[in-house]
Length: 345
Image (cartoon, rainbow, N blue to C red; front, top):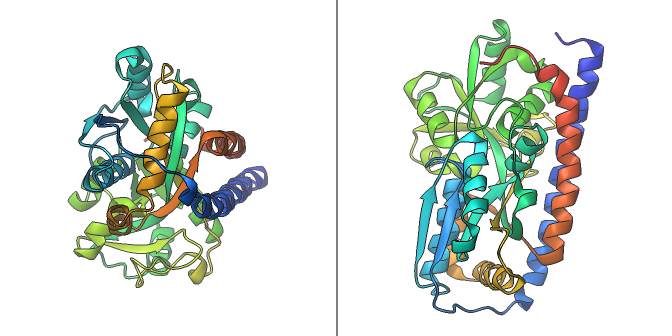
């Protein structure tokens, strides 16, 4: 078990993550209410989306959902994608900065995970070196097991894991101290268990983490709902619980942690950034396209397919939110840094 000082730090993690989720929920509602004032149309130029992780992760699914929505709605004639993983997002960020002059129609998908990695000193360059364009969605956390797992509920899973602390391996698509790790720590703490009751195994993006779960290399997965909703509906995996404040319409049979008496609430925003050379006019054009997209039925198809929640912010609103989010993530990172030090898996 952790010493008292570590418990206080972990409690701070839970508090900071809950505050961040409240900010996302509150600002997201206001932003969506104001989005119908935007009026943007395609200028006939194609859009290229840079994805800082591998296939199947949250960045990948969000980027392709937005791109497909833009294309199907006719807002842009064509969308191309580029997965450039490595360095926890650092490779893609460096590439966008170095080639920005010839990447004027390129945007990169990002999220709170990049903010955390930058604060952890894992990225030499971060989203602060890019041009913020717009946020588009938030994604709730999910604890997942294989479809044939003997664990039919979260309570059964956590009770079994506690019998032999450290023996249950939980996969995540982020580094130790990243979002998938922090969320499972919050869940364990709120359940009355030490976070090291389970062992976190880091993978490069959600696709690899999912593969480890399906192969039996790990027994559970901490990830975003959007990354597993399809596999859950097909019976490949079972979502035990999610970090939403209430059940999602797309997953009516999946309980929230709060329903189970576990005070774990978290939402991870995802949005887009341009290269440093992006002009104000270029930024406003892309932000306008995204703002119009979320009003279209083609987007609703993509959003509901992934069980995402609309979270539209652009311009000064997005910039202010990013600073608020950076401060919240800094609190989380500082609270978690000492307990997370030690042997890395």
